[in-house]
Amino acid sequence: MVITWNEESRLRTCLTSVAWADEIVVVDAGSQDKTIEVAREFTDHVVVRPWPGFAEQKNFALAQATGDWILSIDADEEVSAELAEEIRGVLAGAGAAAGYAVPRRNIFWGQWVRWKAGEKSRKAYRCAASCRISTGTPDCGRSLVAQTS
Image 1 (cartoon, rainbow, N blue to C red):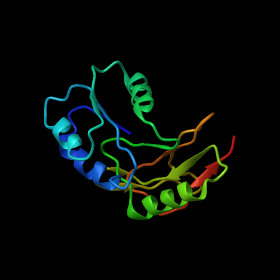
Image 2: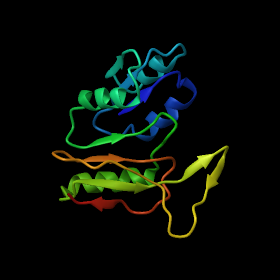
Image 3: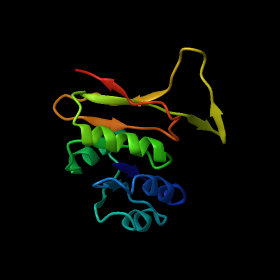
Image 4: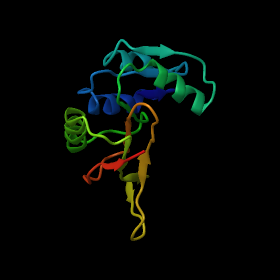
């Protein structure tokens, strides 16, 4: 699941990194570039709607997805091959966790932002009824961390 607005230059890399997913949902806020055309190279599930705000757009996109597990990423993020393999393993194992936190590397102006000892950057979503997975760019190779309810 990706929300977009004028992300033509970044979206292809993002969607290529999740092409293994059962479903890709893109909700676009009326891009003026070729974002929508790029999205349609990967999925027919592209919805264009005016920008109501970040939370509202994410929640709308979430409602468009049909799977029990949803990977929510931004257009400037990508999933490494190692993380994709680990996610597929989690999905195949039907684990009991309510959600997962995924360690990530934050890249700022082309440089990896390193955190102080003991600090970690994670993008995580906690779920009530169904589970969700979220990730950042690029994965640092550490394991998924289960979040139990």
